[in-house]
Image 1 (tube, rainbow, N blue to C red):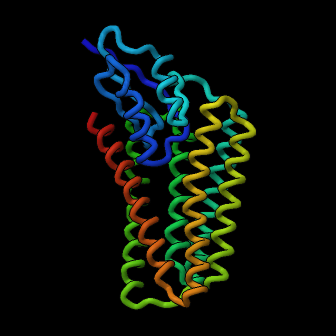
Image 2: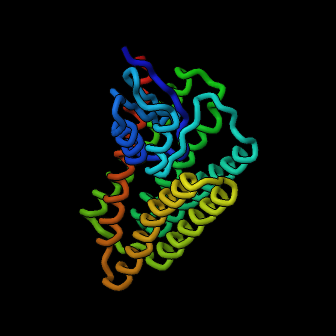
Image 3: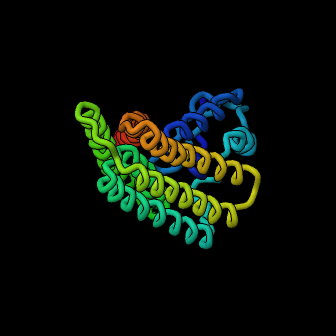
Length: 263
């Protein structure tokens, strides 16, 4: 006979994050199953009699840079306001980066914009959907997942098309916008870091900032290589890599949403 514990999880914004949280929970003796949901920002853990306590689960998950809280615990209004600013910054810069990518002829900028838009939509759903039913959250997440997957496929298709008729992107604009993306990610990290306390929260902010910054730096590096080599191929290669990683996260969102709708 097993029972199920349910938690909210901070900072679930990619498939790898969810996988790390699930692995950490399953590593404890007595845990028979663990399911982390990107769509709802939750973790469900099935445990056998005598299995780990909620505190033990929280400590195991904290090592991945995420915090657990009992599902339904009230959210700090100040934190919600900060998160709303972070959502707005992500969505706003994502739209700007799409426009800049089209002007510069850079597939890497278009691919990098997916990260901003994906983070903004996922965090926005977590912020807005607290009072919604589980089915409504899942339906909304399914629509988001389809939209994000379509964007990712469009960018990947454009990147593959560019490989057959490569044109040199505007490396200066590409590098400037990539550097701006890095600045926005650091600003979001600063906003969250100044508000959130605790070692696990700090690690979470660092992990997310690091992952996003690596993508931004890859775009800046590609811009430098485009200028140095006078070749569009660095832009194409980086765009394909970013788009492929994004599509993996979109697939995880769709998987979670379908699983929750079927439950």
